[in-house]
Amino acid sequence: MTRQQLFEKIKEKESFLCVGLDTDIKKIPRHLLSSKDPIYEFNKQIIDATHPYAVAYKPNTAFYEAEGAKGWESLQKTLEYIPEDVFTIADAKRADIGNTSSMYARAFFENMNFDSVTVAPYMGSDSVKPFLDFEGKWVILLAATSNPGGLDFQNLTIGNTDEKLYERVIRQSATWGTANNLMYVVGATRPEALADIRKIVPDHFLLIPGVGAQGGDLQKVCEYGMNNQCGLLVNSSRGIIYSDSSADFGKASGVQAQKIQVEMAKILQAL
Image (cartoon, rainbow, N blue to C red):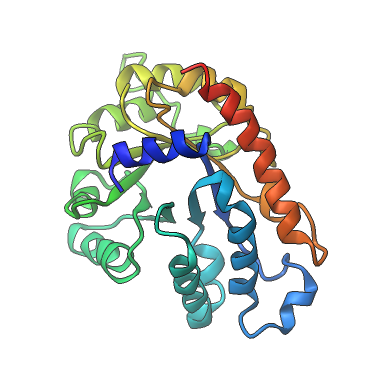
């Protein structure tokens, strides 16, 4: 999916919602456990209910890896079930030396056919560039994350300057790709960072986790982070997929997704 196609989908649905499929078999409704593939059945009903309001889905691969080979099968089936007009994100946070990164990229882009994958930048350009070699695919680079421990390193200043480490990561990595194949993860719980990030990468899309259960504020995120083509994918996981544990959990997830979409539609009208 190209950047323009993603923007067109945002305009069509009046939404920049990404639904995180962090599917934990210990948290899904108990009645699903008798299904042949409980994780897939859960995801299927979430997708059916939220598809009208979502422009992206983001399975966190850890929740599937934890179930071994069966979990990978559930993930592949989930990916194939997601409608083709929706952007898909493998939240895998991969990166390694170049030849290993090439294998990770093949796994998620060629084998599984995700549109994008989250990548850790710590090992530098030669660990990231193999992912950028795949035409039509996206790298989503970790920049300023929403977890409290992210502050352990990301806000450290470089030398005798005021430049923060996460700002250097963004500035340097922006030379490896373009706004057409490179996005950044910026946590919703750090909206003050968004204004500074937009000075460095005004045109790139930003993936924003942390809205909902983690306490991020959608209005502030948009105030500081939105550009003239929206430029945001705002993720909500637990607040949508675990909003109900009854047999009507799918319907409940759709209600929660629609609430966010309505708020997003109002914000987009100002563009």
